[in-house]
Image 1 (cartoon, rainbow, N blue to C red):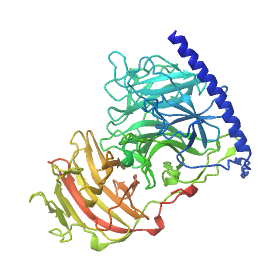
Image 2 (cartoon, helix red, strand yellow):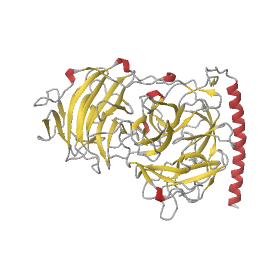
Image 3 (tube, rainbow, N blue to C red):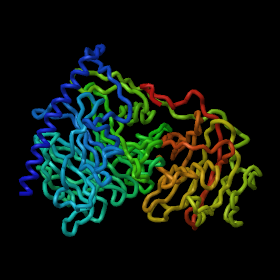
Image 4 (cartoon, rainbow, N blue to C red):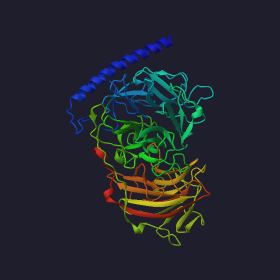
Amino acid sequence: MQRKHTRSKERVLHLFSALLLVLTVLLATMGTASAAAPVTAQGKQATGLTYTNPLNINIPGDGKVESCADPSIIYSKPPLGDSNWYMYCTTDPLNDNDRNAANDFNFHLMPILMSHDLVNWTYLGDVFTTKPGWVDPGAGLWAPDIEFLNGKYYLYFTASDTTLPGHEDSAIGVATSNSPTGPWVDSGKAVVEESNRWTFDPDVIEYGGNKYIFYGSYYGGISSRQLSPGGLTSDPATQKQIAIDNKYEGANLYQHNGYWYLFVSSTDCCNGPLTGYDVFVGRSLSPFGPFVDREGVSLLAGRAGGTPVITMNGNRWVGPGHNAVFQDFSGQDWTVYHAVNRFDPYFAGAVGFTKRPVLMDPLDWTNDGWPVLRGGYGPSDSPMPAPAAQPGEKTAYQPRFATQDEPDNLIKNFSDDFSSNTLSNKWSWVRPPAPGTYGLENGTFRFDTQNADIHEDSNNASVLTEDIPGGDYMVETKVKLSVPPECCHNFVQAGMVIYGDDNNFIKMAVFSNFNTQQIEFAKEVFPVPAGYPRYGNTVVGPPGEWTYLRIVKHTNKTEEVYTPYTSIDGKTWEKGGAYTHKLGQKAKIGLISMGGSGFTANFDYVHFYRVNPHNDNRQGPGNGA
């Protein structure tokens, strides 16, 4: 009886969804037809529509969808198509008020969203009403990946825990349907079983007549496997490592001009207003790698490669990540991704439960073939021209490419080449280190690493400080950390801080993270509201044996925006995600060497520059900031 009841309910829900779909399409068509769209030189109609992040997603008769993490998107396919776009989200409440009679949040088992124009979206329902039998009752269903294979729709997803004997941890499942709205039939088993790793975040491609699944997260890294022709199982013997562990998750592969591009996300997805999640990319002629970044560093290297592509820019959006790339009907590439509004980071009444609305922005390509979000300006926060959502349309979006911040005049009074026999008297210590653990040698400042830190309440590390110039500036150093790139010296680090005090700073450092070395860009702030984080971080480009670090400070009306740049040769610079702070003119520049003893950092110089006024990249196309 229960089985019949469940199937009956599925049929009712499916019929309701179909009726709702028809009504929505009619309304969308009427709304689109009422606006006169200009005709372009190519003879296609410009949509005339604009959108503003986050995307506008209506719940019929019940408000808006305010969280859609890990989005995956598809245009309906013939002969089953209906000229609509569909998007699928990870399991979460829809908004602040999505609660049951007991005032607990409703967790939707992968919401389904639909749009005709990629601007106005409607929530249709969920993929599942109950979890598949092989999934643990307390598990989450995460990171859906929608594909059209074998003449029907496949939805791959992560189950955070299972009931599979010997494989009770995370696994990847799949459900199929003849329609993007369902009903969805689960395969009844795992496509990729748990294997002593985080089996998360599927992405499926077809290549050379076969199907392949890419998956993985920090614990285990990114791997690929060949799928069966039916797409329901994978062959463990074909498993191949694609990207190193302890740095990336959320793989999304996209082919462009003969290359395969691997988009991957890094750091903490869900740290409220200090979330530093960002998207990085490497490319290869093969979908199985080796993937290298713009500086030629492999994503499998210990000094892990990866070029930043979707990063924070100082507006309200932090933690932009877990993206899916698609192309509109005028040939413009776009990507959907989630982010966090730093001014509204949590579900109401649930501090610590990060809300992740879905954003969309154009993905552009530089002359040397690397993707940048919105011409390099980052996530948009004001009206943007809409994509060409339907055949015959053309987007009004035209890319304008950002220029990087460039140094102007050297500010000599605040710079130091460490070419003397003793430290200049402009430097002073916060907590002087033991004699003999620092000094000038071979034209560098040597600073032995300390078993100490300035992380939250662990404020016992030494910081070598000097004053900073007034106004906006760029500060640059070149550092060598003697920690080997192999495993494992957590979390030894060396770099610089814009230091207000022990609890208020911006930090940029080369650091050891298990079997990797990375470049951390971090923010600590205090005091904060109860339950809010004090410390957040992102990462930038790869480190080298010697690593160049830059921090650029721009001041707006209410706060300072700090943008990181990294380089391994001093010529090619990678721009990372910006953090904002309010450190004021009393802040100092500081050098740090901490996180564990037994190693040495050498600083070649500290240079301050004015920033070239012709390289202000804070504005972008579509009047976005």
